[in-house]
Length: 511
Image 1: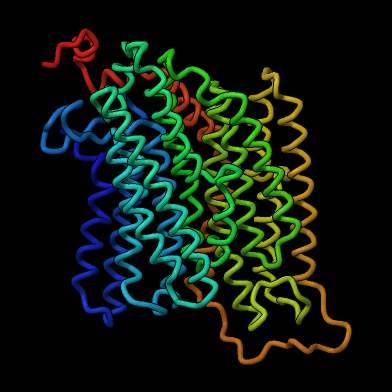
Image 2: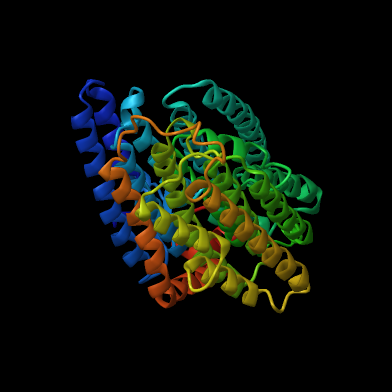
């Protein structure tokens, strides 16, 4: 077997074990092991995407127990692209954390690597039970990372975050029990096969299980009204942690796409499960996020609302279920994750440069660092969707992709108005952070501020450079996302790769 699909999970998993065994005071050694891990992860992720783009989905059967009985990992183009995006974000976030943030608590690096295990596993798993397992690994690590450094604000945000996600996990388990009880399988490809022969007496129960499963994914994707946790949690996290969290809402969206397109799409019993109601919820989420952006009191809080708005925009994709729309959405998924992560780290740099007022929108001495001004301008213009930046390309691709939809007027109106509101809010925030000063002298003057760490600068501006490369390489990336969308909308290739003998299974014969 080709072992490439399991490497993005194995590499951080081994690193996490090694880091847990090391003395917590050996920070330099921990940084070295963690840096080596993310470097290897970046290399194996690039290799995985190259392999996945050349053929049918790569299938890895653990212990050589074949599906549907064994556990399988499946690297299609969507999963491989998501894993590579995670690798890029993790490398930048780790470099930023090594500027001193990792010294604020114990075992940061071990938990950081465990978070990567959960995220990559959720992208690559071929069955919904192990999707639950990787979700729990990811969430367990995120609880600890959110609280890293301590403080009342983080504790409050972490408590609400834990309670809501525990409730989601309980619903997830109920959904898995219903699916296994009615279909006798939890493998995505096998679910697609078994759904074609569901008896009428069990149709309602199967549909309920699918609805519960999608509810959990929508909670992870932060659709309104399941999104109140996101701005509070993301704005409370440390800058490098929030940067890594930028990919977490995308985990829920990728899960929706995989389950909907592969398992549910061809099943009459699941038709309409995601439809007009989801696009309404997505548009309302965008409007809600725009209002949050206007009311934000700090830059990191504003960026958290931007992440929520991008999640709402991406949820248009599964609601319309079209190849071109999916391709545009996947480009925007990569772009918004990178820009969101860079913006969180930029908020951290600005906070360091402003002293005790941090990144709050209060008047004090302005930030004089011209590099920060330039970086903020690029990120703000990209997030707002101004040409010629990658945010403009992503939104433009989505707007043109939905032109045949009956919901096109509503989508265009909401997205364009939200972009205008975002532009106004970011201009106002930039003025407050970089140019406005108190009238009555300078009561909030900066004193004894250490310079920003070079690693933190390099990590932030490295991601900004990547966001600019998304402009230059927009055509190759959009071609890749189109191929990923076409593969996603042709699930027979996925099913045949996972279960080559699926025709026998469909007739009820289990080899």
